[in-house]
Length: 86
Image (cartoon, rainbow, N blue to C red; front, side):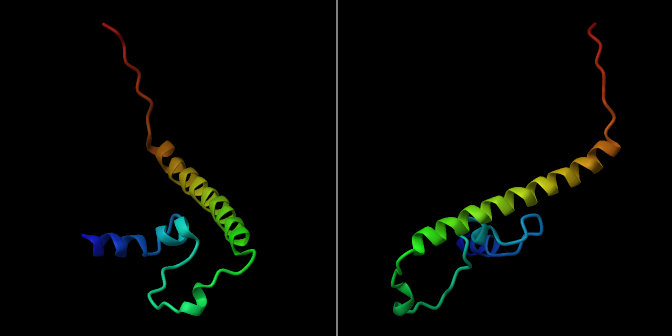
């Protein structure tokens, strides 16, 4: 089950335009680990926080666009129903 969840979370989703993992963490998982890359450089936290905020704004826009797209088709076929008491 863990492999299925991993595969799902790292697969590109058309609605958000990226994988759910990337949307949450703002980077793609890397399976190769290099100790030299693990060194935290000054300003990295601030830069990463700004990247996360930018990503959240982009995702909000994409989800809003998708919601409006699906609403348009729903509204075309939806017939309001009225119910009478009695």
